[in-house]
Length: 449
Image (cartoon, rainbow, N blue to C red; front, side):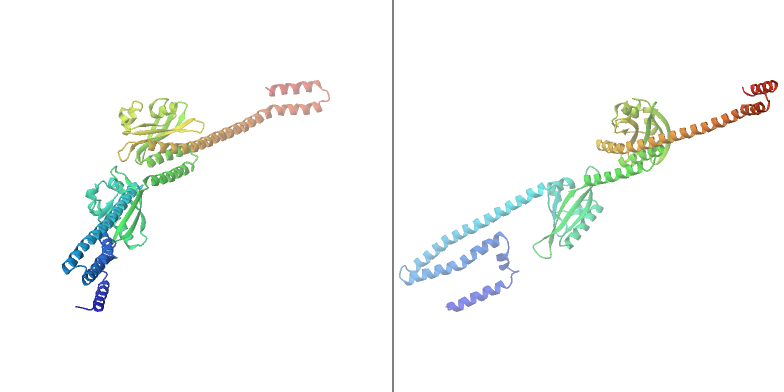
């Protein structure tokens, strides 16, 4: 009953009015990047235009006398059913393909995240975990099922959670994200350091955003840097003195501090064996005059074998001196030789009992070997300096004795020379008088022994 022009205008006006509200349905669905939006965009033009076109064809055939009205309706319905089924199959195929693409994309994302050389996670704008990779699950010590949907405050200690929340907030406020160093105590009891990149991920609306994070453990690198710094500092300390006693004191105390031990001792090799004079324990200096001959105790073992000795059960170790072990409460020990570049043992240092109660490791042993190499140069320099001092003292003593000898010699020679000189003067004046000659000779004979 309405003219086609009026109907077209009303249809266009309605479409225009709907299009002015993109945040509302159905335009939101049509514009959305979803499987439903893709299906709607494909099917809507066909669903709107196809019935109109088929209706016009059906009407034109009826007016032309090709079939009556009931047949026209039957043909129209049948055609619509066939075409709409085809459209449905076409749309469903598109949705399935899109879902498969999204599933493959998620699988690629998961594989990528699992292969990262570190931790990875995604949180929502309220800090709840939406995704964690296997590395994060393992380090956090919480199963993935329990972790998802939880916040840091529900998983970690308060100080750790506060650290994470602070950095999350900074990442949200920064368009580029942040890169920080965070700490977390692992199940092994060691506090690990990680360099963490946190960045905002746009959410479905401008007001909401997710937080992505990737963490790489740098504990080993940090420990290596600290070790190099410590070795340089120790080397500088060792080379700051030429006093052998002062050098050995520095060596023992620095080795104790470097490994985190409770006590230690150091000494030099003598013809009798390894000798030390002091025992350092938790800041105290205890006098210790002791000598370990070859193969006696750990220092004596070093004289023969020239390699470090590590024991984490001192009370049962037959090589260690049990008397000293009980006296100083030794539970674990590393004894390290000081070996020159020519392979000669010139001393040792030994540390006892880690402060945290754990045992010594081969990494500790390797670290002390590095200290030993620096100490060998310093000890050789100090020994050479001491030898020069001894030689200088010997030269001074010899010079003083020479002066004393010459003084005595001059004094002793002065007494016999005086009568000889007097006799010579008498000879000059005697004019051949034999009595005078004999008297002068007798005087010289009495004065010269």
